[in-house]
Length: 59
Image 1 (spheres, rainbow, N blue to C red):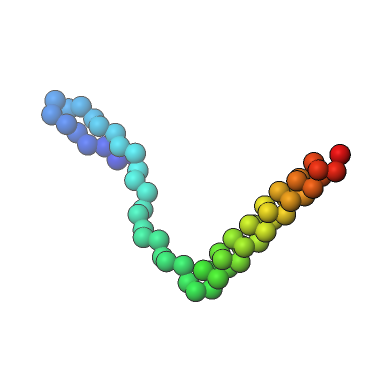
Image 2 (tube, helix red, strand yellow; image 1 turned 135 degrees about the vertical axis):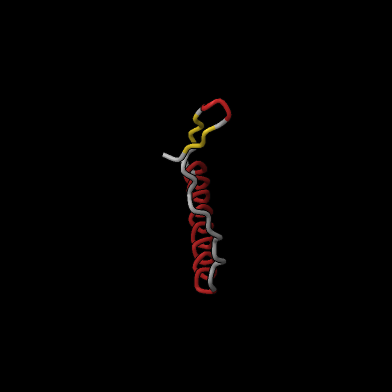
């Protein structure tokens, strides 16, 4: 475990720090996939709202 010794002989323990890295920007293929998934999710939500609306109208 990494530690340092301070004045007076006190030990100071530190947690291990994770390795830091920069995220890579999405590729063109990933961007296209994100757009298609966004469209599909929007269509699903709109469809569910429409079903709920029509079901509640036909009691």
